[in-house]
Image (cartoon, rainbow, N blue to C red; front, top):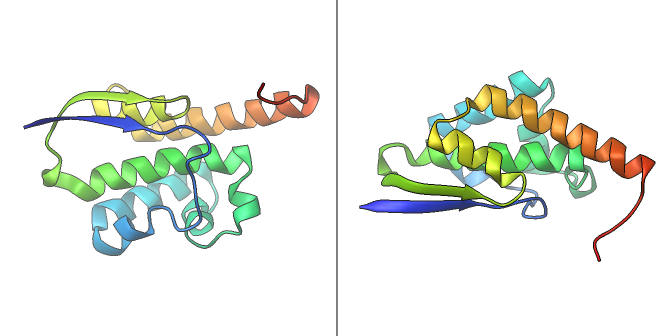
Length: 131
């Protein structure tokens, strides 16, 4: 059986994200630990315990979405049906690239961390909103 996965963009986060995967899968826990190592801070702890206001910040929220997606993928392990199609909305495209094998998880973490930082800086310099 083939499946398609669609990875969400910014705004699809919540405190407690990925904790279910971490509680039942060592592969998911490894994905979380790798993220903390690459990013240089305890993002998995922030994802699990908050505070929500800190997780809400673009610089944390975007990497958290990638980390949660990869934790889920790795947590499913052999139970993942052949991924015939992957897609991502906005920052979710990085998770899709990792799922497709086009980008390493470590590289995706570094890129998303830089992307989030640059978006935060641009938003600070040029405040705005969605129409």
